[in-house]
Image (cartoon, rainbow, N blue to C red; front, side):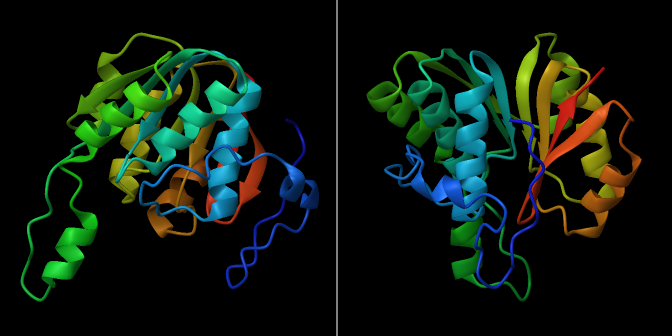
Length: 215
């Protein structure tokens, strides 16, 4: 998976450089978790896991679990095995002054671990799920296992994102991959501008950028 792909048009979300993806099996489609990624970004994550193969994967910033389930679908359809680390605070959002109850409900993900466990037990029993509830960078600094792929989508401030990058990138294997979501946000974009030279950009789809480790 070495081709470089262009960003999507924000208004249409059409894949410009890789129309053949439209003909590929979309094994992520049956899952019903809410997602903040476009369908093309979702397919990119699924395809990455399917092609990268067996190993450890991390979804750092799980939200409602769509990206975690998508990675599992990719591993399963590729005939692979592995463990997916689902990292998040998993807490209900406290409604602040001026925020609506609807907004709080949309962001609340305290029940996501239970939903993911049920989904994995029912759909992907041979794919291991590791729920990591707490600060995303603390988990990265505490772990000492190699990863094939890490998807950073937690704290989007510069300080939070750079801390996640430092915590997790050290764990990624040679030829493994690191992805950033919401790359249009200033904090994330600044971190990407400063990442180490051994990271090669191989995909840019919508607001997701994937880098391959050449270290």
